[in-house]
Image 1 (tube, rainbow, N blue to C red):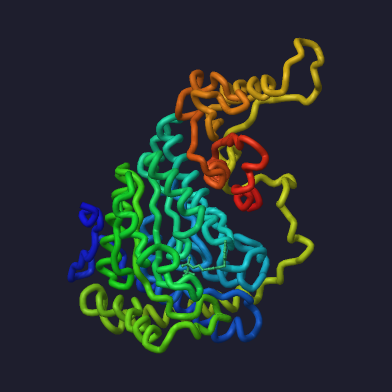
Image 2: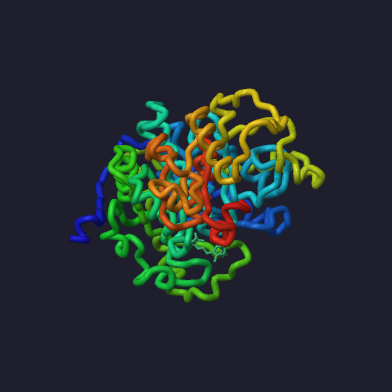
Length: 467
Ligand SMILES: Cc1ncc(C[n+]2csc(CCOP(=O)(O)OP(=O)(O)O)c2C)c(N)n1
């Protein structure tokens, strides 16, 4: 029965000692203090242009981020994902400075503060995010497939329990990227967790416009190879248990999972949004579901005293104020440097590509050798691919019909037979998925070679090509 696959309502009484509740409470308070600082000071002072409050989404995200402990894990989120990133170790000062266009930190002031790219050496990285809703899904699927490639083809045991986690709101579940990644993850049984923060709205549009009845977990209950977890993201015990169950399912190589947690969006979509489309009852009901007082009620008296709770809140506020002062003391990013490192300028990247994994290409030269038999272009490409597959175990080749058929142009003829299904494989018919997956694999240190059959068919992949 479909309902059997919905694991809901898993309440427990006392705080689970397997969680570091003090750290969780502290980080939730940090996130709240950052939101308040931006809303009350930095936006009115015009020091920040784009502000997306995470109030209401924060606690559940911090629980999730606290479980991304394997350095081979990766996550990709969206503009409301800062609490998760705080849990991964993003510095408060860097996060504030980034939104203010200050130099230094992970973006050197070149993003809008909430759209992150956090290499996180030694820990789980946050893959580069995009402002485009839905763009986060297919690169994360690529990372998940790369994890399996490392394990199965390259025999790297350190990937055995690694997972890829993507975050999206309820409206993101209507995007092509979501469905593309869902197809990839479920057909390939990848270690990927889809984390859906369902606040009932995509800016002003109710979630019933994004999926029938507004509940993506219910609608996907009978989707093959997908375990569904669903519950209340404002109830600390329930959210913690569901996060643990979902993460354990994916880490345990039982296949992909989707975890939907309902949360209130306690502010407008962004600072500019007045929420005129929500009536008073909706707003009141949302505030009644604020996870912060629920977290306090869950912890005070068992995991900590009231004065400890107040102490953490005061400490968080002071830490955010110190970080603000330090961030504002940084110089403003220079417009002259805005194009730095768009192309290679002599300094190698910190995350992604084969270089960071120690791979060094064999010596080569670019002198033409006109001797030898003339061959046509298709044969030349096939020979090149053959040569690269033989020379470098990180090279993998994929696209529509490139397996047993050998491609619609016969470019890959015989390559699957020679190198096996893990390295040369057919994909689902989804160009965003082909290119987005390649992006995630390249970030994970592989050398993906995606094939698109004809130029025209690259159009659905435009966003992933541009990103
Ligand atoms: C491809 C694309 N279309 C439209 C937008 C404009 N936009 C930004 S956020 C948003 C709503 C997204 O809602 P949801 O995914 O539920 O996340 P939430 O903001 O509620 O956390 C829209 C329409 C966008 N950023 N990208």
